[in-house]
Image (cartoon, rainbow, N blue to C red; front, side):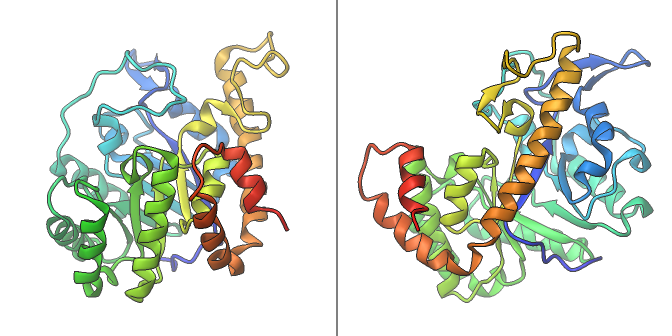
Length: 326
């Protein structure tokens, strides 16, 4: 396994059956349109991408791992997103989605297949911990057991915030020794708070608490890939971002797939979507390069952002303009 030490921020394009088109393949089986889009993108996602264990288990994504594009950082999610009742705001197909049975054992079946397959010998594999609705102590013990079983990969400990932020901070302080066993801590964007303002302030508190406990790993925000949100969460202390908005929104001008200025009428929806995704990958790379230049000043940005957020009723654009002023 290669050492997990990516250039920051790491922007991870995600693939999921949820919220995307389901199409019949040549065997007359339903698969996600992401099935073929993953293969079509090929070298363009050689840096990183994320696939759900749920989609692999149910055949919504390629079962022959040799068909997957090589990537330096391969994220395999636990499947919790596909079975919960929340949706990304950018999703169009919110009601045509059937949830199939899912369990820890099914997730482990996929994790075993991934980690034992030679196709990924040169990739850094990152496995998400199983979504656990229990206490923080139960969650960290479960994640640590996963780490012991898959000692040769990186475990992304997803912290499910089923309690107050103050309780979370206290739990971090009480379990800081075990926390140092994990390189990545993950949080879903929506569980950080009800509003973007609350999520950012809570993230700042979490980052400071972790730093005070001498934890210097990476914070992963699940669902925070939209460029403006990525900037804000990066300045608030997060390092890794994934999401599905890159498949639904044209980042360059913040428009939908059906942008009349860009949608090619002689192409079908699939081909237009592929073109948009390719453009978005370039946009994400440029965004990552720009943000990486400010990594040495992140403490300054955190303090500045916290001060800005004291004022309510500001929009995202206004906050970014004030935050990024030289």
